[in-house]
Image (cartoon, rainbow, N blue to C red; front, side, top):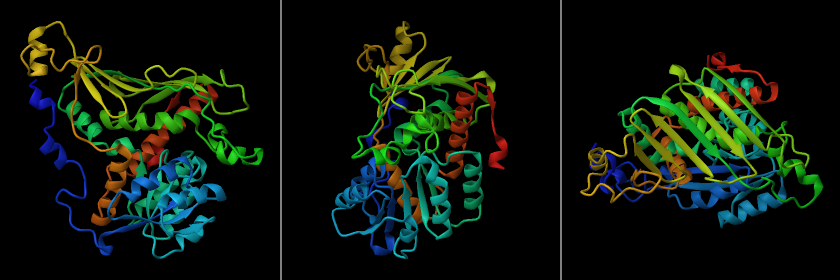
Length: 393
């Protein structure tokens, strides 16, 4: 394998990165998308500055049930913008073309369904929906809709991740035999609240009524990637976890350990901790010819038989064989790519303007959401849960 096969040259890489300055037409008002942000907390509010930096995507309204969160969101827009405490009033605004839903997990489906009924395009943050019925309802609604629907698994839009999927499809790691994922932190995962009356509204991730906990908020991204890499869904899942460290009244687990079994005996393991941050976010895809390791924005290839200098030379493509080698990691996979959240929003804008289905669409989002609900069922019942194909039909 030559290094030129491994590294996407800058010119080629830029051709695969959706930017406004490289060959894109001037965005007049007729080539712009006015978006309403529903939920201006950490995620929704955090995306507003990114939207501001994207030509042809304009924040035309903000909505939040918490006044101080709404005020913060409006400040981030940086100009006069329509403000709403009721998302249905935002949906009534005919000047808004699309909505970004960044609300608590259990509210995603109702808002998304209402938005589609109102004729709005939808960018719905992960995880798509809570529970099989809500997942099925969104699939049913979108199947008869002309609106664009994108699920906010931003790594599905990453050009680094898509390049890795291409490498794997072209046999770079050989036959995949196992996958290991982790997303570890050392913090209580809480947000500060101005008063106890706001506890559930702000720390909704801690309560099962609203949240899928670590599995929905973190593992869902990695589940989406594994479904994509394997072009498959899991046959079954088992898992364990508990509230074992943070004894503060939370209901969702502070540590989880999952095994998803995919076709052909491929097991994908997922671990999330909140008491140890060693190696943070990491995905390791192991094959009989090599391993690819991925973090947030970088990736490495580690071939089998690393003691074979000839093989290292072929991987590296450089005389001496170790020029590009990073200790304990392997050869860097180099491809130009944008921040995944920005790329995801760029892709959404382009999908709306060009009327094309996003890569991270309702179906890929639904598959990841089913995986999440299966995992929650496994965690809370102690049973092995089979794939729920009926939800997609």
